[in-house]
Length: 476
Image 1 (tube, helix red, strand yellow):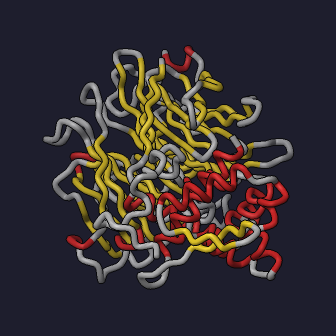
Image 2: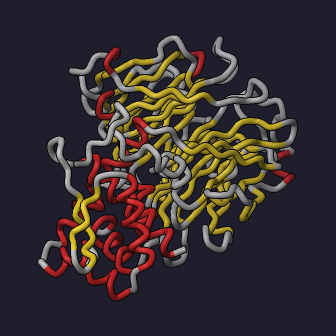
């Protein structure tokens, strides 16, 4: 198995040399076998080299390892250069060759400043150009709402439960009952805004926060799932906005009130800093936060709050975004959707109060999310002509650049299949896009598009990988 992995990794390196050589002529000098220097010109030569590597003793192989030669001549930076030119799948294979390679890659590729920059560039290219690895999980829950990070999927349901799923397999790890039955009896089950048993959620490394259609807010310890806090501090009315980031939690009620809560490692673990309502602020439909600023979407505008003093947040600006269904903050910029009440996706400079972009103006859009510089937005399922709703990806840097015309914006469209007219809710982390749709009467389907998967492609075709586009060998 080790020989096979080593062979695959050497193929990766040969492929690197092939794609990054200077000029038309290329000489690959790697292996010294007592009396001669091997010249690799054809696939047959490569096979002979691999056979020699397989048959040689460990001592002989170590003596003419190209990486050992580089180390002996204080040229380890060239090793880093080689590995940095490999794609993420090849890096994954190379790490499995031996402990030395694994240690070097972890330290000089994943761990170094330059390595991290190059890896981020690779990831950006994956989002833009490569086909993601798609997988689906069927969940026996009435899931409709997603919150994700790199470790887990949080699923909000329509049956009073929040569910934590493994991000790689969809296996259920925990589920939490988010309010008592007696509370639901107080709610009008025909409430147009929110079903009584609906659960929305957000999560950090430390906690999971759930809010319900009855107004119950619960904070759970993420590791133990102990209940740290449970109150209906907005009253027993729907809570439609929840955001947890760092040590701050923001919730927004349908009555227009906004609550700020702080997390602590000491008792009490959760503290309500303030509960306030700005004069004239109607229903809070959605919100976002970056620990310093809060973005609030209402029935008629989008508002920016300063959170420097958590006990007394201060509204600093508002923009006429009309009806806001979903909003997201990447300070000083913000994006919002408005379903059928305000078509498309709007992008605003919240400090200057200027609308920078209005795209997808002919579509009813529901969810909008930002992770790093990737903006993802999904169509509403039953408000558009298309039978299969789409998810669109954009580059935030382009969206806020006034010198780029709408027709020149990069955009990627991903189709989200569904069984009925339910709206797909989406979420995004650094490497993947997630969507949840209805599955039958009592279930849900979670779809994951992984842009950094080691299953994205098959092994190289060894019959062709050394060929130019015209099918001829140029390794001379």
